Image 1 (cartoon, helix red, strand yellow):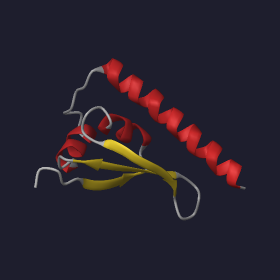
Image 2 (image 1 turned 30 degrees about the vertical axis):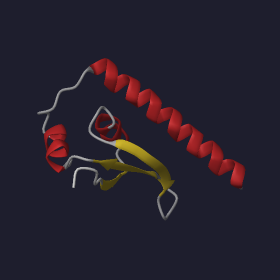
Image 3 (image 1 turned 90 degrees about the vertical axis):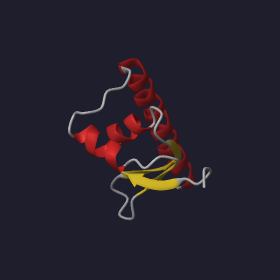
Image 4 (image 1 turned 135 degrees about the vertical axis):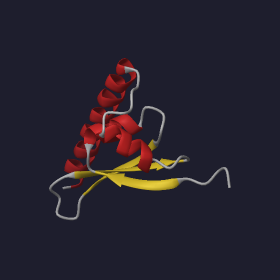
Length: 89
C-alpha cells in the first residue's frame, strides 16, 4: 500500500537531522524511560535501514545547507520539548 508509513525511533540527533532531509518526518520527541536522553520518533514511506547503513559508512551525500537547516530545526524542536516538559513540573 502506497500510503503506509514505517515508524522509527532514534536517539542519535545528527542521524535524525539527516533523515529529516527528505527520508522521514518527525512525529514527536519524547524522553527515554530513564529520562537521561530524548528519543526522536519518525515516520517514513521508504525503508531507511539501507540509508542508515550508508550514512554510517559515509556513502550518503545531501545538500549541506539543507542538513544545517534541519539541525537548526531539530534543535528548536528539542528546546521546545524541554520547555514544555519544564512547564509540566
